[in-house]
Length: 151
Image (cartoon, rainbow, N blue to C red; front, side):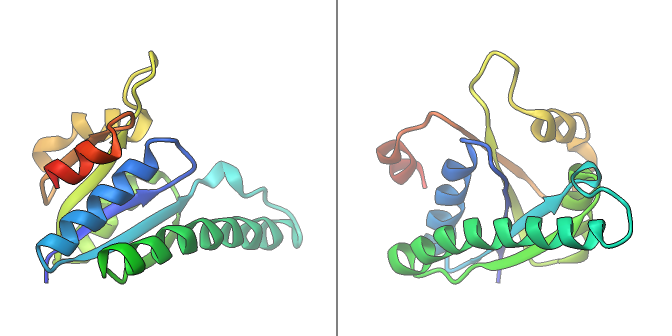
């Protein structure tokens, strides 16, 4: 089964990327892998503190994931898989793609702000020729109707 890998974060464009991945997976009998990465600077090191911060980050991720997963199941008939990793986000995205041969497309939401498409998109675009699968960029301000029409 071909899987769509989509990154879960707190950016506004994440929602469009999630929707697109679910709709494409539904229409192509594929799956969705939702990857959330806890960056190293989100975990302070110290006795007991790192474990508590890690658990809080995982709880936030799980809560956010459950909202998207419910919509994917109810609206698109897709049962997504959640993967949580720690480290540099771009390195963890690459590791997930390289570790799962069923991933056929990476779906990323692109910011429409003046600061560019976002740090993950910018970095991965520089490494595009060495990625193990195609990348689909979804503009963060694309309407729901347009998303449905193109998926």
